[in-house]
Amino acid sequence: TGAAWDSPWGRGRPGWHLECSAMAMDILGETLDLHCGGIDLVFPHHEDEIAQSEAATGAPFARVWCHGEFLLTDGAKMAKRVGNVQNVQDLRAAGISAAAVRHLMFSTHYRQQLNLQPEALEAAVTAVQRLGNFADRLAEASGGTTGLGAAAAELERAVRAALYADLNAPEALAALHVFVNRANAELDTRPTGGADALEAARAAFAAVDGVLDVLPERSTDPALAAWVEEQLAARRSARARRDFAAADAIRAELTARGVAIEDTPAGTRWKQAR
Image 1: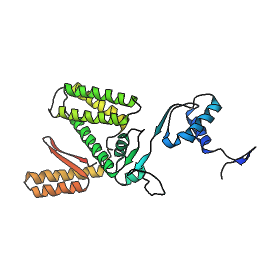
Image 2 (image 1 turned 60 degrees about the vertical axis):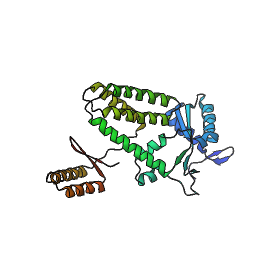
Image 3 (image 1 turned 135 degrees about the vertical axis):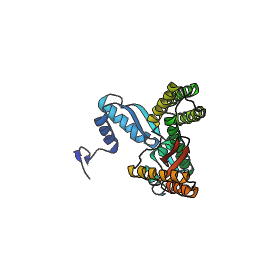
Image 4 (image 1 turned 90 degrees about the vertical axis):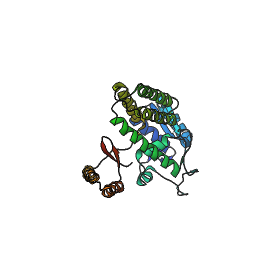
């Protein structure tokens, strides 16, 4: 069905190998910088693309090829006939954030099979929450240390080295978490000076997340924000009159609405639970 043409071999249309070559070159030109695909497409699809494209243009079809391994579900290859296929929409519908999905994908090298299991998803969700909590702490910090500045420099170096080593995303992700551990230890000393070190840490952390994008999404509903502030004011009033039962009830209501609060010397902070 659809477009077809007469040929010496009968009426027909180009196959999907030629379709991909035509679309790629129409949009990206004769030579692609990077061509990605699943490991199962190496032969015959990508070899066909190379053969027909380079025969037509005389130029290399792609400078770099990147083939990802299979995604498994509980150790088995995904297959519609088995009924174990999960896609991104399924994960999002289950309440898994996009950042957690990315964190999970980056936890295994693209040349290795990734096993999609509930435990792995839970670990990714927890890791992203921890990164989000650290991002809040770093944003609110009032000073830095020499150690914090050194950790920032090491983060940028380690992530760059990892990604240049065959896109070693797991190593880059590990470097990010090492930085968080080191930075938290430095911030535990409650530094008040070291503005340059603090800014270096913020810049390095933002630069790495600009590549990996594993921080939680920030999308606070204005109506929710107004309601939360009202509840926090009521809670402060309850605590001031030592009505701790009422204060606890307000905290429970906030938690039920997906709002986490933290009492600090500077006041009560809140954020949407991730």
